[in-house]
Image: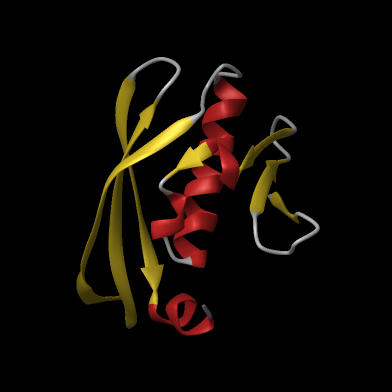
Length: 108
């Protein structure tokens, strides 16, 4: 499970992974302002998992964001999101993808 952290302004999000007690903050990701709150949460979770495996991971830069059309999967409306992201320290490019449900979008 993860623990979400807000700073004093209440705007920036950070996610702390309980797997390895690592934290990834929004400020470590250039271009994150182009993501919705649900997309930020999913991306921060993935990057915190990556940092557990490699503590030298980050900071990052979002290169491209692709949002697919809505589709029904097992009676749930979902939208696939693909984010190309670069680890600026290592100059490595990789892709993170996940599905956002219609309910998550409505709660944003």
